[in-house]
Length: 97
Image 1 (tube, one colour):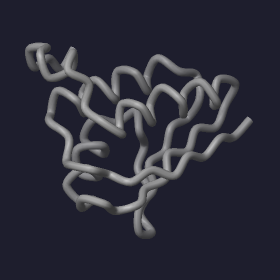
Image 2 (image 1 turned 90 degrees about the vertical axis):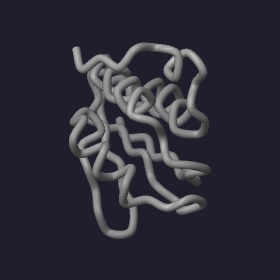
Image 3 (image 1 turned 60 degrees about the vertical axis):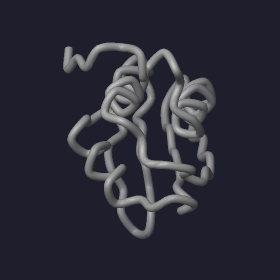
Image 4 (image 1 turned 135 degrees about the vertical axis):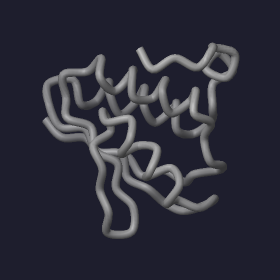
């Protein structure tokens, strides 16, 4: 199953929010891809997501694509993380584990 969600970025995300996004993406069995302006990155790779975050400007449209058995749930949860930085992610200490 494949599910695609179109989003607009309202701000660049903090490192904690990006780490939280990648951790959440890795919890799904589906392959997660972020797409913008002809570039796509693996949503489960922290370095790719950081580079993607730096490439996207405020109000740019991006696509969140999940392909796999839990694609619908993955796009729902991950799009919420991208729409606005959760307070809980901002309060967590920086951790790469």
